[in-house]
Image 1 (cartoon, rainbow, N blue to C red):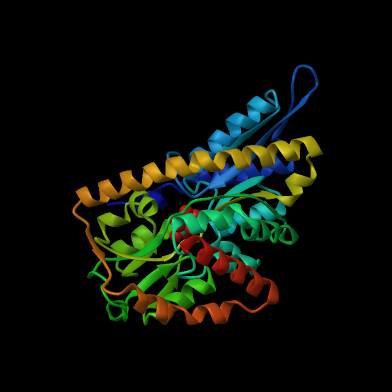
Image 2: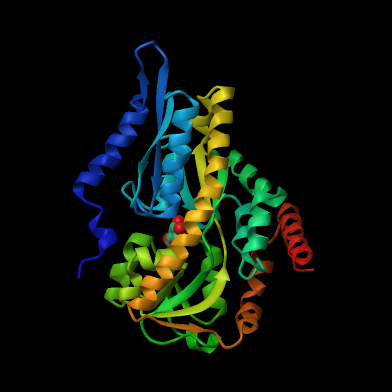
Length: 345
Ligand code: GTR
């Protein structure tokens, strides 16, 4: 069977990639309308397919931008990883070759240390805790921390909880992880989390994972229900073990270069429409988690609870100290932990 993600990177798409960059560099996304108003179509990337909640949310954002700007502003989405991996498209975004990008926080970990905080294992006590943090001051502080790196953080989207899956066996205790080669996103934090459990971490782009599992280059990976389903990894890696070790969110960013080209009113509109797409996305996300889980169960995937989640948490916890180094990070972390305690009490 062919790898569905990889098959998507065709010559046509390489061409698309080139033409998007060329179009933007030559001002191709700008068009003068009949009454000499400038209309602008932002170019946006997503690794997920067109029916994934993150893509649907940006599509919804485009509709409300168009409506509120009387047709002057809109978004053209390149979904399904057409423009490359998250790491590549982020570079393009910083450089101004792409206006918008929906990515996970993981590829930002290397250059914005504040993003590491929201990616720490076993940080959030519940979805309620996560959403309160993202909607509150700590969430905003992490979005603001992206600006010096050439990105404007617009909003977060849900990503649920990530759990391990593999081709061999159910992971019931951390000992079951020993020796497994687990694909991770390109982030040192993720590498450390896997090593803390005695497994071997292999950083790899998402588009290569299906083939990697098929050819046993890797034994497993980790992700949420919708990604495990939409990438069809469940077809080869048939054991999904509910560790729920990370709840790092998705983020929608705009290139600071594109941002600088906007007037104040346009900026406000972009921020407003991004904010408005969040509750829509959460609704779509919750539905998608249920639908994905049903599809995975129906396919005969072996799903298991772990014996004692505190064992996983205890082993992974030392990575907090390794990656939380600055006062700003410590401050953020403290706020998040305090919020969790308040919500629980
Ligand atoms: C998904 C996430 C993507 C990407 C992917 C991965 O859950 O939505 O942005 O981070 O995981 O594992 O590469």
